[in-house]
Amino acid sequence: MKKAFKTEIILSTTQRQKINQTIGTCRYVYNLYVSTAQKYYKETGKHLSGYDFSKWLNNIYSIKQDTWIKEVSSKAVKQAIMNGDRAFKNFFKGIAKFPQYKKKKNQHVKAYFPKNNKTDLLVERHRIKVPTIGWVRLKEYGYIPTNATVNSCTISQQANRYYISVLCEVDSAPIECMAKQDGIGIDIGLKEFAVCSHHEVFPNINKTAKIKKLEKRLKLQQRRLSRSYEQNKKRKVGESCYKNRQKQLIRLQKLHARLKNIRQEYVRFVVNKLVKAKPAYITIEDLNVQSMLKNRHLSKAIAQQNIYTFKLWLLAKCREHGIELRQVSRFYPSSKLCSCCGAKKKKLSLSERVFVCDNCQVERDRDFNACLNLKCATAYEVLT
Image 1: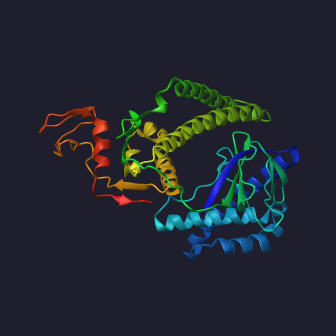
Image 2: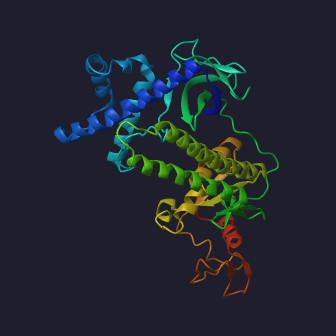
Image 3: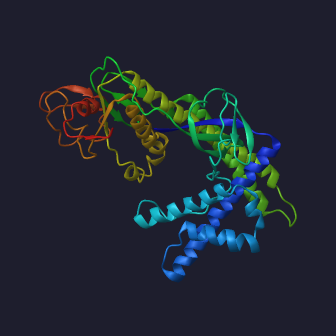
């Protein structure tokens, strides 16, 4: 089984310049491929493959123009081209939207380094050897296993920090969960992040004072950046405030990264807590998040819950520990069914937080009633 280990790295000034140059070249080549492929499709009606574009880039374009493309790792540039090729193929299949240009401020481009020689990607306790970069110090010692087989690594930049993701081959044998208990039904919502059938409730972290304070600070810093753009329109020719604006942009990126890390760490905490309970199975609901985001009143709150990330990490942990993960259909009426007698309620508005059965007059919390129905569901799909 392949497993990725991501940690922060400490770079020297020379290494930082080399990484920035590699990431910038990959972003430029990706955007060049998107524009060239779009123009080629309009002229011929055919898709320009990544291999054909790579040959044209190496043999014609980089010789006559932009010779600095060959100053960085060729493997990283080739991977950027193949990422663009995959984006166009996904668009033609209807899986994704049309590929967009990569912007420097979004920091979505990464530098890819595969293992070409035996001396590449050697891992020690405190450092790793990256091709064309050299030995790089790790901020977290001993996190990446030294005895695992390393296939490749990816270096990314976020909020003026640099991270390395190392892809390793580890033992695929599942961890045996001894003394398995009964199954668990999980109801994901907005009022509470997760309500479980074994009487455990995980609150919504976005309602805490810490998150609200950071969002208030983020709003203030965003307003300052917007004011900088507006003031720059009135400046004379030759005057610029680029350096100050860049500092303000880094402040914004740090706040966004901190909020993102807090939310993802909370999702990881919830997943680990559920797996450590050692259930026989876990049942979740197939939520149509894409349609839920169309509600302009709740779209921000839904996006901050990281529902898709929770599902992916729970699936990976269940596979690792040998737990059966079940998924019921999105049309399963978990909230309208009575968990005591099984009667279905005809109408149940979102404002009704207490479920009252019309048949047996049982009163239960709406979310807890839903998670009990998910636990006892008989029609489901096994994901693990």
